Length: 359
Ligand SMILES: *Cc1c(COP(=O)(O)O)cnc(C)c1O
Image 1 (cartoon, rainbow, N blue to C red):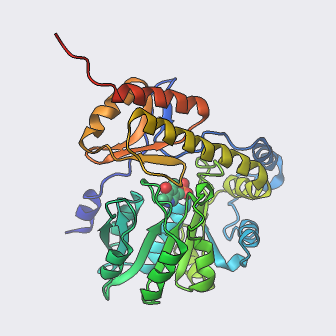
Image 2 (cartoon, rainbow, N blue to C red):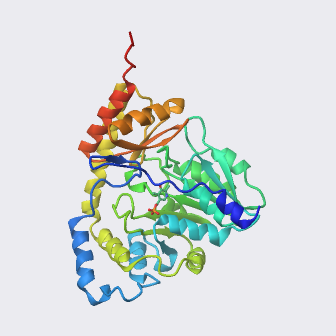
């Protein structure tokens, strides 16, 4: 296949939909709350500050932000790489590790960006199906390793199923992965995880030089529109990421907002707690309505609605509620504000109601 044929065979990344002024948008795992007033105020200050002169490029090294992230996690700034969202850091990682003829292993279904990034890099995606209970099948992922494997992506909590990996299972997995293979632990939803057994990607980095943890300001911190994320890994790996990074991808405003967010983590934690509480409420209410769903550790829940997905999506859209639906598979429903969740629950109640009997 020619390069352009490869590109044209890629499925376009789908942005979560929502139409109409009263739309309830629960399709992109966004934070329902706007950025903290203190963060917004610092962004506004920055714009009046001479450093906020937007005729100048942002700091390319993002040293101030990397230092702040480093001290938050007890690592040095050179163990931190930043990008325009952690998707960009993942892109850097794929480009730095895998090219033509190389293989990248990840679970499936998982984050939709993984196969796209892999193919764009010229490498071959190796998708390992989730287990029946929607967990990563780590044994099968180990069995999928070949001498062409360069990178393994673990997503925990997994998007879109909300399932997590435990410290014990990841330790066991890593003990069997050759050290020349990089293992990324994508923990975009780490702040919402309340599973005491759950693995910490950042902690794994301190014990395994081939591990890199990916986190983002898009979800818990509510800065999805500003685009900033980061990776924590070895000095060598982060240096490689900076080599392949798009220069100046993280804007000055994004760097400023991320720094401010790190300074106001207490206030953000309060909001995260609200979302976690709502996740519990939504899960229980959906089960009461008769839906089947597992426990999620992210800011969304997964309903394995199978062949009924398209019909349910239709009903939800009719109520102006927008979830992310994969026809024939299931529905990923982001947790919104309490009132959004109420509207969503009412729409789901309609969707489960038996069809009226026609005379
Ligand atoms: C949302 C998400 C990200 C991060 O997205 P950015 O906005 O690019 O930081 C990364 N991984 C997963 C699994 C996600 O769901």
